Image (cartoon, rainbow, N blue to C red; front, side, top):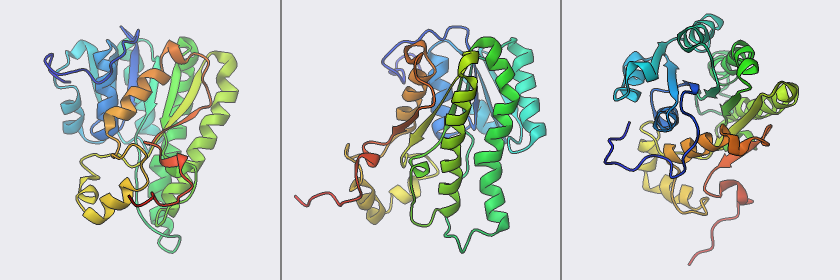
Length: 267
């Protein structure tokens, strides 16, 4: 959490006081920023993932009554069930789920052997399905929101990302199907599709001048995204201000998907 002297993540204020929010993959990057954004708005936030230390760092400035750390393997039915049961038992409700846990592993179709495909699918798709299946009964009771973290990689292809693109395309279709099935229950289902986002895990690529030039050539706003850009979109999509939005795959991409791929004109 930022100190009181620092500007909050969001400029807007949202009515999340007392709401229960579960963020998977909450130990770093987009998950950490999103968890902290909801905490700043008064929510009670559970962060879940495999590493206890980074999860605790996400909520280290927050009273125990407002936060919860759940260490679990979210690619397994047992891990997902234990996570949802613990959050539900602790606070008696689940209002917002941010399904952020994910894995990126480069490779062409030649590299996509059974082990690589299993790793990508187990986190990016199977784990998402397990989480949705387990948490939807809670969201029906709260008339809550399920928000998946997809990617612009789900809209088309990328070089050297065959497996990742396949899983994120499936995520987008799943989100839209869930939105149709759950709408009459008062449950909204949406996704955020970030483009390349600057995090600790991506910094090495951004430090490569050639990669950075190529990346900026695709970005209308002339800068890479940061996790806080995605967190602000999550606050909006889960809020009452987005009450008539469901089945939406929202690009948070600095204009990446506005382009057909033609290079930026040379000045």
